[in-house]
Amino acid sequence: MTKLSLLLAVALFSCAPPRSAGRVATGTVREIPFELRHGKVAVPVRVDSSRVRWLLLDTGMGFDGVLLYEAIPDSGFLARAISVRIPGAGTGEPARGLMAESASFRVGPVAFAGQRLVCLTDSLMSGFPSDGVLGYTLFGHWVVELDYDRMTITLHEPGGFKPDSTWTRLPLTLHKNSMPWVKLRASIGGEEAVELDCYLDLPEFETIVFLVRDNAKFKLPDGLAPSYLGRGLSGDISGWKGRVAEIALDTFRFENVAASFAPDEARSKQEGADAVIGGGLLNRFNTVYDYANGRLYIRPNKRK
Image 1: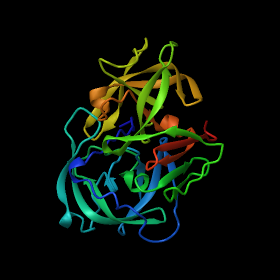
Image 2: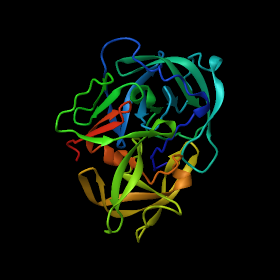
Image 3: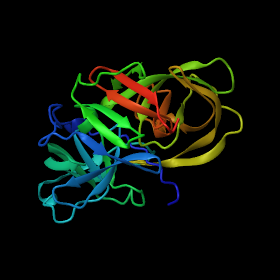
């Protein structure tokens, strides 16, 4: 497989754990190193005494715990697991997996307990340059600062982050499956820009993915090329690639932007979304995600 895009929208609505889980279990160090793998934020995770696995940090993962692309050998996991179906982006059937509760793991030096552990039992995600994803364990309980200049994630206590004047604050709302949404303005072909409702998908490599449907707020540009856009937990996604005249996130403007266009029913499980803001845009800023107070702080980094 040459296309290593990961398009995850994990949704286990029927068995979501209590929101009180996910706090640091031991220790006082709350700084986690990360790497960029194919432009995606990957953190080192050790489940029980297993080898280190590199998991993608996913803003759209709405439960406390980790999703691994394969089972952990000799961990006792199978003895306490139940079968589950795991829906996500794509046009096929949801992925198959096994799920157990009350797992423990470490993300870098930070320890967590009382977590959900989900392992895929099919080969849907084989070939990807990572071992799985995690998200709400961090985003749901902390103010999460991603510093791309230092390649570190800092977990601030709720209310503990005090931004200075170098940060721009954007309103952020949580929708289905605790997915974070923000506003963005876009001019597809040079016309007056329109305001779009977008959700943030940190593992998405693209800068922006416009969601195509009958009542879309934008018109498709000329010259789009049919393209394979990646794979989600419900299969492959095809669409189109091209360029748009301009997008703007608050006062930060980007011109002649490479963009993808995907059928809404295949790419998004978020009703009413106009577009998906991916890591290709988010990683141009150092960012602070404050889910509890509905705020996203951004500041240009060296990648801008």
